[in-house]
Image 1 (cartoon, rainbow, N blue to C red):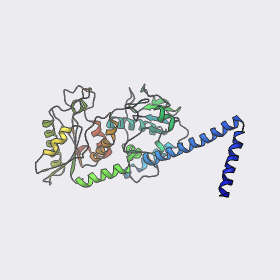
Image 2 (cartoon, one colour; image 1 turned 180 degrees about the vertical axis):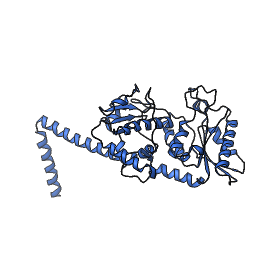
Image 3 (cartoon, helix red, strand yellow; image 1 turned 45 degrees about the vertical axis):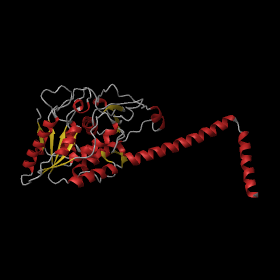
Image 4 (cartoon, rainbow, N blue to C red; image 1 turned 60 degrees about the vertical axis):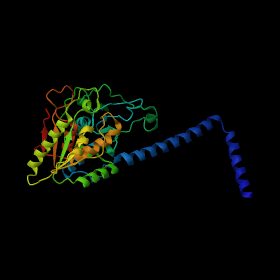
Length: 371
């Protein structure tokens, strides 16, 4: 009891002494405590981000052997202090809330365009950072952009310290001063790029990799053909962008299977059964696949529900199907119809991305005409 009384008396004494401190000193003490807490929380938030959303540049366990030399070159240039860095921005995280928003197309378009810009920087040995919050994918640590407003003020106000909404780009000035560039800038002529850059920059988060491995184990990849049937945003979701690549879904789905059969017969002439992995943006096509009773066909698909690319929630599922398609032995993709009025390219960039990620040979890809 005596010890407790002594301790309480000492605490009251400390509080009394604090009361007599000058006001300026009190403010200074409070400010110092607040600053220390802020820095501590900021570091903890940064550490949490680094652990969950990034992987070390020293970790090359996921890299294809063909990409090792380019990885060394890329990471060397990331340390180049003689040139100012380029920040490539696709910050969609708050697009369905308030504040800063950068719509940047679908997974295929934005990724392939971004890789062209990374190639531009690499050719000049300019460090490049990506402001690209991802769902299901990790970004290599030395390419992560940290905004001055991060982590608290930026997240509270949903703001970034830069503005790339004009979507302008001047590659000739890169390196002289720090540049901020949108993933899909206007009036930019894209250049050929090494697809190894994708594997250098990204890899699935562990739980997504587990799901990918699970699906691969269920279907097997031996003699498996990927079928990517893209019916379009307007056809699948009623989105007002004239993106209609298939109207009669039943007939179009049958044609995609026929194309898959032709490709399988060419690649695996000794096989009597056809193994397909179907990825599609159309719920009706997924339902049709479940009703196919041809004993020659084994059609595998995930339980993913098709969703419009502007949905942030759909991005993780999209990445899973990109990776699964990339691991098939061949790929069937539908061609844009002749009477198409939308803005999409001849082939879905989702399909193109899958092909390039998996280094699938042109001869192992069949373009399927639905009209």
